[in-house]
Image (cartoon, rainbow, N blue to C red; front, side):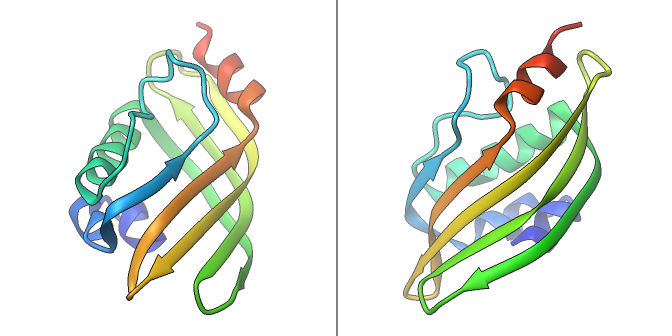
Amino acid sequence: MLQHVGAGETDAAAALFADDVDFFIPRAAELPWVPDVDSAAGMATYFGLLRTHLDGKRFDVERIVADATDAVVIGQLVSTVRATGRDIESRFAIHVGTRDGRITRYHFYEDSLAVAQALVP
């Protein structure tokens, strides 16, 4: 999934998701790149909005911990908010769950203060 997102292949990334998705990103309501998501189609929208609103500078995966149905990806990222020109620098964790070979859970945790500060011009 992360390779597809990084390459701008939003439809290919979204195709890995199940019809029903448990999506969670703690966020302020005014965050323009995080819609309400509950499906693979919603994930395609989310990935597209990321590319519309952010310029990814760095996305470093430091560790992946996984078992048969869950994985946690830990790393660091730097993205520029196009509307303000300000950077988001944050550590992150992504909790991904699977069932029947499809992604059913996508929970993304990052430094919400860094995100809020980057939204201010």
